[in-house]
Image (cartoon, rainbow, N blue to C red; front, top):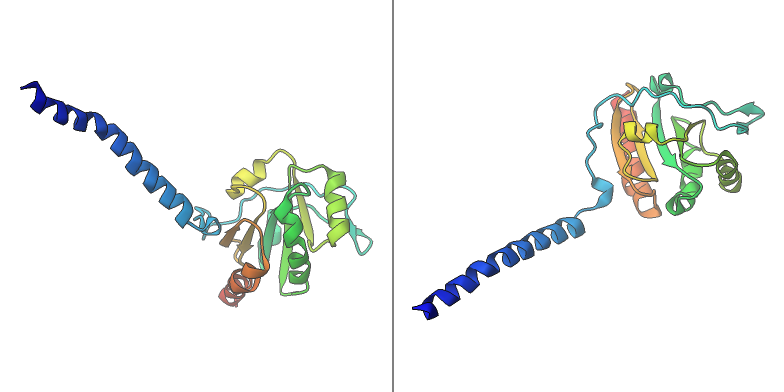
Length: 193
């Protein structure tokens, strides 16, 4: 009689291991199948956070200081908001693309400098050029939390109505610059016409 119970008992003992294997496979599939740039944001369609940020000390352009972030700056213009830092490797790679994007005078480019030293941030902008008409300093990371930032870099498009219309998680690359970012900017420009 004990011989008929033993195989059944082994099967019951294997159930937790089988359950773990199924859960691990689902986790692995979801992790590998998703594009991190398409992580949904609860802020899409909602107003940009009303967080004022101080200017990056010592940063100027055309002989005038570059202002910090005033949430009122989003009203009436399509804005591309980039959360960046000098220590962020993808930020170095995307910097020339933002310089190109800054040539489009229909939009304003806003920078949120995340947990960076002012000297390093100014050196970074001196090296690549400053595409930002506004640079707010988020020294403690509080603004990044309010914007729902997962990690730097992240880029947001804010429509003329002050609402966030798009979020790109990760760096802007030559591959997603024309195919994704510029397309979303054009949508925001048309929406506010």
